[in-house]
Image (cartoon, rainbow, N blue to C red):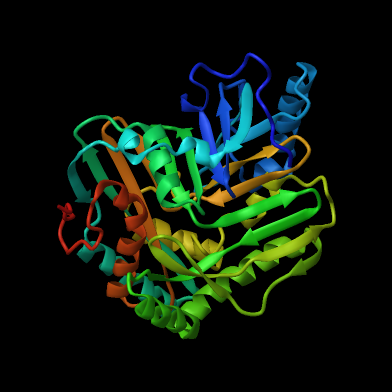
Length: 402
């Protein structure tokens, strides 16, 4: 898709230094959206698609903008983990795609505030107990995988600035889908490694991740960890559940679908992940990327399999509401192009408070201690912004690095 420039005279004061109402970074560029022309607070559940209410609301909103002279309006926002809850989606008044490098000034100019406290809302004993209960369900029901997450609460000495956090995340995670989205009770911000769906014309791409290990500063040790990840039966099974789920969801929409027979390993600054990139050609080029994302969501990467049993287990075992964590963030335009990423490696900012989230997939060969360690490693994506040691001990506090 070509770069869209703001209409003459509509660039907000300060240009790219101003705070957009929505931002989404992908492949070296950032979509910045300003103002709210119309909100679409429709819950993206099966009913809203089956009765046509969602498609009708979106078409009306796009038609209104086109009547105002906007050739290709866009929709931006976030969808919660539980699709029965209202999504935070809106059509902005203006938008632009800009080079990501323009939004990442010197680190000294975007330093995050000092941290006062970091608290494990769900401590290690409680989390590992939930994993143990999940393992029991895996042995006694048809449940094959469930993703169990936990939150971490941070209080700063001054209010957080979402723009500064996003710039810092872009600097530390240049290959991630970095986002900042206004949601209920704050701003959802994060650096997701996982593409749920990208649609360009008739072409679609999805890149599910499952099966993880932490990075190592030693090149030799990292090589060993990559080989161990590729050879791990537990991680390969966990990954296969996700790939099979994505394949099944996309197959009905595609005339051709390419699925590599084996996963590869991708690196983020903190993690190694098993990765499979699926690509396809759509039977109907008019199907929207958001409808495709809905067909995929929630994938076994963030929920488990079978989906209904995994959702029941999550409600039973997690002990808190995920809200936006595990949902999806992205955009689409009126001609059907767009991108949606999983809302992981993320947190919700509100004033001086930041709640972070991380999860791990539990399968038959999982161990409670290993799943706790995986969530700690994943939390490092956000905690690194503040110099916080993510390898927390049991209890309700996390060490602050010197």
